[in-house]
Structure formats: C-alpha cells, structure tokens
Image 1 (cartoon, rainbow, N blue to C red):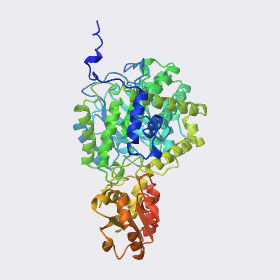
Image 2: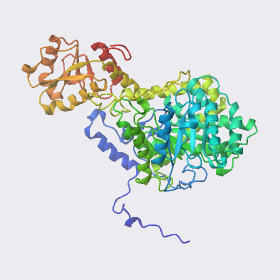
Image 3: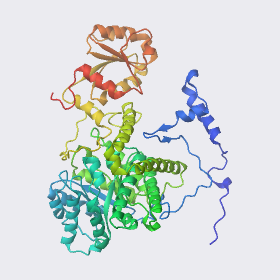
Length: 617
C-alpha cells in the first residue's frame, strides 16, 4: 500500500503563523504576567514559567505548556507497553457500564438492578457485607439477571470469602454453563486490611483462581481496589504504585501455590478512582497499564496477558454533601476522563452517594451520564483519543516513573502488605494528605459549592445513611469534610457578621462579594450595611465586623468606620484585602485571597460562640 505524501505545512491550519520556540514563548508569557505587577514583583522568562506552573500534591508539576518531542513513538493499542489500551474499542459498547448496588434491603436492590439493566447498564456490582447487601441475599438480588448476558462482580470489606461464595452459588442456582458467565469474585485481602486493619489472609486466593481457571473461565478472582489508598489521601502516583505492589504480592503468593504468573495475570483486575482532574486521570490509567505490563514482562508473562483490565470509579473523595448538584459536573468530567484513559469498565457514583443510599433518580442520572458520553460524545470511537498530546504523554511518563520508583521501594521493603504493617504506607499517604489539605484550606484546590461559591440558605438533601464498619486501617476522608464541619456549626441557628460596604457600589462590590462568599463557606450570614458617608454608620455591631471596599473607599471612610464599629461593640474589626490599604487605621486582621480559610473560619466561629460540629445546640 502506498502512503499519501506528507501534507504541505503551507496548506495547513498553521499556514501564515511563524514558529515560536520555547524561550520565545516564555518571553511573551513574562510580558503578559508582568502587565499587572508592580516593578518589584516583575519576573523574567524563567520566573514566568514558575508562576504559571501548577504543583500537584505528591511532587508532580504541571507546566504551563508542553512541546512535542521529536522521535517519540506512540505505539499501538493492544501491544506493549499497553499505554494506549488493551486493544481497539467497540464503538457500539465502548466500555462496560457498571452500576454499584449496596442497599441492604434485598427487594429494593433487586428492583434497582433490573431497572438499571433494562436502561443501559451492562454489568452489576454488588457490595456485600454488614455495610451492604447480606451474603444470603445475593441470590435474591440477582433473581432477574441473565447470568450469561450480564457480568456480575462482588466486593466486601468484612467477608470476601462469603461474598464470592454467594456469587458462585447464585450462578450455580441459575443452571447456566459456567463458561458463559463473567465478572469477578472480588478477593482483595490486602485491600480489606488497608481499610479494616489486621493481617491479610491470602490463603483463599489459590482456590479462587483455580475455580475460575477450571470452571468459570470468563471470571476474574481478584480485584485490586486502589480506591482505599485514594480515599486515604494518596496522590495518583501513590495509587498506581500501591496497586502494582498489591497485585505483585498476589502473583507471588499464587506462584508459591503452583499457579503460573500468566494465569494470575488473567485472573486479576484493578479498580481505581477517576477524578474531575481529567488529564491526571487519563494519565493515571495509561501509567497503570504501562507499569503493570512491565511487571508482566519481567515475570515473562506472554504479551497478550500483560494488559491491565481496569475498572474506573468516580471518586468518593471528591464528592461533597453541600451543594451535591455540583457532583454531577465532577462525575461527568471524571467519567469522560476514565473513558478517554481507556477504562474497561466505568462506575459513576450517584451525585448523592456521599449523603447515603441513592434514589432512583440519582441512579438514573449516573447511568445516563455514561450513556450520553458513550453514545453522543464519541469519546470512545477511537482507542486512546488523548494519545499523542505532548501534555498527556509527558504526564503519563512522569506518573509512571514516579509510581515505579516508589513501587520499587515498597517491593524492596517486602511489598504492599509489609508496607501497611510497618506504617510506611500510612506515613507516605499522611504526608501527601497534609499537602493536599493545605491546598484545600487556602482554596488553591477549590471545591465549587463548598469552599468557593457556597449555596446561600442551602437545605441539605436527606438520604438513608449507610452502615459504617469500624476499622483500624487507613483513614477514609472526603476533601469537603472540613468545610462541611464548619457549615454544621451554624446549622442550628442564624450566625451573622456585620459587613460595612464602604463607598459607592463600584468601590465595594468586588470585595463585598468576596467576603460574603467566604463567610458563606461556614454558613455565616453577612449582615451588610452600605456606608456612603459617616452618617450611615451603624449604632450596633456584633463581636466581629468587616469593612469592605477599594483602596479609595478605605481612604475616605475606613478610619471613621473602624472607630464607629468599636464604639458599637465590635471586639474584632477585619479588613477585606490588605491592612496596608487602610493606612494608620488599626484593624485586627485581614480577609484576603490565599489565606487559610479553614483556620480563619474556625476561629471566627469560636469568637461568635457557634457550637462545635456534632455538639447539641
């Protein structure tokens, strides 16, 4: 076959535009960055690069621009190193649409499973145990499921053996050909210990793999669920490294039991978190496949078996209870990223998942999110649609190398189980979580509807709470919890702060909006008084008051306003912006962008006498 000639650059979209080198781009960027900066803060080209660089928790930096690297080979989907996926995708069913069910009421779950399968879901995920569906109810929940058509997977945090046995019994009761069923038995003893504590029992793994090899040939026995580490604060590279280390622990144990690595690889899948940071999610899935394929290469696993089978689940950690409707946006972006990253199965958690058990409506929205993306966005019409992007390729490489480095350290120290037992994993994740918490507190990592742009006067949705299993493993925490605890302190009553908007609207509107939104993060109502002149100053004020205006407005009214507020009973007077803007007028603090919002609001609520979160009003 003769290939067409290369396209003449003069005929392309870039015709007429000159080439810009990285150094020339940096000079242009510096000129833009310096436009609004005073002389003492202006930067050169290198400084502009640093200003525009984002720093992710865990040590990965996101550059402002990426340049194609000549000679970089992309490779092909379905071949080593499997970065681009396990192979071509089916445009009609590009990935497995998998819905989670954990309602302990068997009749409710049975009805929900059938409704999902009739409306676009292609496989069923049952969470079994004291915090989900009872093992004895699994058969009833699956009554209406055609076992030869719909894959079924189970997971459990308290009795994985019982969950797997219940699934096998349900398949056997249906009397179908064992080779026609598919899914996963969900064994993940190291993952269970990561949540609950204790010592992992790897004993059942060999029998489970043998059962799948000899009878249920289309079923996987083991699911390495890396979400436990994600929910404990892991960075993307941490999540990949721990997934690799856990899976390798299983492969080695199975090898000692007489099961070849190739068979172990065929019986293991991975479950990872997909977040609203779409590019890091895409890169994470690509990096996981690349690194797992390398493990398989070292173990001399046949190339066809080295591709990691990945189930992506929209992140529980990123969900919020306040303004949960924003979770719809987060989940949509995460689902898109999982699809673009080549996930084999995707679960979109309902937008109210963090509040408790979902409703029929929230499950419907979750499954339709996938249907719309798969059928109307065309994201999966080709394998690895992000492949070739200088940004995605570089980020994939950086994540893979960072994950591989820590994976090597874990392996040298005894593996994933040993790392959990020694506390090395907890220590590493705690450090990353602390870094992330600092970025959340300053809103460098904003949570729309929770830490920024809170919904004023919001009434939280009410859902049936899930059972929470006790455990001594890694902590499990959502990013929004600290802000939700602030909101809980004001839920019992009206808590307000006097805010003086000084001068005409053009002078105070921007700062007033900023202050109102910041106070709203904790559910504090701004009691706004517009002050056009000294005659408008209030006669009374609460223990804390804020003045908000521009530098010009402060020049005219700050001194009189602060004096009036102190005379009216304000113990603390704060200024929106910099204290330097009010000159010699003495204020007690600043409210500005980049401050530790959590520490500020906690201290403010203490001053206002708001009860602690969880305390009785």
